Image (tube, rainbow, N blue to C red; front, side):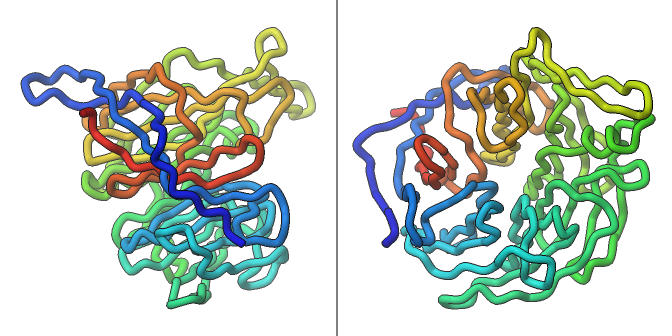
Length: 342
């Protein structure tokens, strides 16, 4: 049985950034994140028992898809949080998943699943009470994330000197752009090109937040040119050393943890939320953080401002709804309504 709760008895107050209509200055305003639908159970056979909530994407009608790489599946829930359908199982064949990482939905409501382990894109469509597979295609590079703008699909990952690649749904590559980092070691080129990629369709902008670097980039989805690059303040970076015999070592100052670029979430056409997770010492799990630092970035200028309030791990937003994936004491999906200050 699904665990679905509609609780509006409390609110989490978050500081978001809003542009002043009277000047170009950026000022803080208090918006309320009011909890709504929540899914999650500790154990059992329910579809709302999650191993890991890696990504969420939302359809126009408010139904939403949850990607769970530990259980090798993508699950469709109604806007009210009721189970609709699920697809996927562990394996290497068509419709199977092996380390699925992210989701995207296009203008035709086709859902794209990036399966990093199988180096493949799987395509699904929600039809009534079913998730129908609509094909897929293989990739010739290790993609790490994807996003959709209209019917255009953009993938993130190092390939022949570029990190962003536009694809058609038949698997043909349109173009590549965005210069990646070019260290001598090929594994470093791949790892430093990983991160979160988001499409801001209203501005024809792509925003890239690297996993291991204290910067955020914006590229034009039209020309591929870099629009801006901004540093992220108060960032504890991992130290990477290329030693003898091509050995790569990762370390942190004083043996402590390091920051990890988690997600970029557009909130409107002007601002996006950046979340940087703090990994504990010796931890590499990109879904479990000891702390999450949140920032707002202005999409036109790249100005980054840190938020003082703690927020849950947020994966997507659509309209006035924000979708988060808390994991204490077990993985959940929680929907919030974004309300303006009173």
